[in-house]
Amino acid sequence: MKVIIRRMRFSDVEEVSTLEKEIFSNPWSKYSIMQNLFHSDVCFSFVAEVDKKIAGYAFTWIVRDELHIGNIAVKKEMRRKKIAESLMKKIIEKGRIYGCSYAYLEVRKSNEAAISLYKKFGFVKNGVRKRYYPDNNEDAIIMFKYYKNKKK
Ligand SMILES: CC(C)(COP(=O)(O)OP(=O)(O)OC[C@H]1O[C@@H](n2cnc3c(N)ncnc32)[C@H](O)[C@@H]1OP(=O)(O)O)[C@@H](O)C(=O)NCCC(=O)NCCS
Image 1 (cartoon, helix red, strand yellow):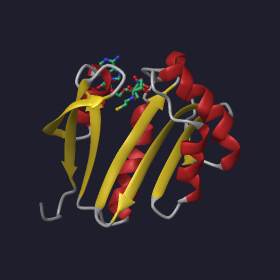
Image 2 (tube, protein in one colour):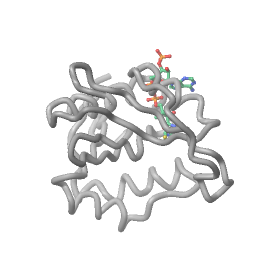
Image 3 (tube, protein in one colour):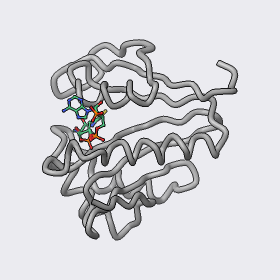
Image 4 (cartoon, helix red, strand yellow):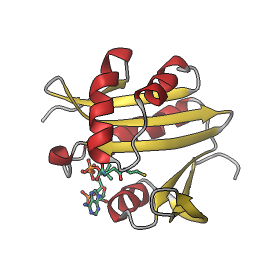
């Protein structure tokens, strides 16, 4: 299976928005997705393409030396095929190229799959945001990964 990771385009918005609604209980609106594309100097949004269809995507932001991973998702029937890993490799590499000191993200406390993915990439728990998710008041775990050879 060939997975192509590339920057998200405006022509991807419909497909990404459909996936977003399938995957998340509080999906981002099309407008929010587009806002990221308009600010492509700080917002780095990627898709994973398999057979010319979008199988996964990620939204990230780089501000100064911080890389923030806002979201990463893979279509249900395409999971456990290392698509998220391919997206993560691209994201982490982007941060390295931009000279980031660290990457961070928030993840639902109960999201074992995502937490396991992030741990695999060297992220460690760094704090908790209490009742962060408004749909069910679930806590978010904050996870950080420091780039090597950068000051903490
Ligand atoms: C989390 C998610 C992105 C993983 O995508 P994926 O393409 O299936 O993941 P991969 O196949 O690349 O797996 C990479 C690693 O992630 C972890 N992982 C993925 N799915 C997992 C699961 N169901 N249970 C436990 N660990 C899992 C494992 O560490 C895995 O490594 P391994 O295969 O060596 O065990 C996917 O489950 C998803 O889209 N979930 C819904 C959206 C979401 O919750 N996103 C995170 C928001 S913070």
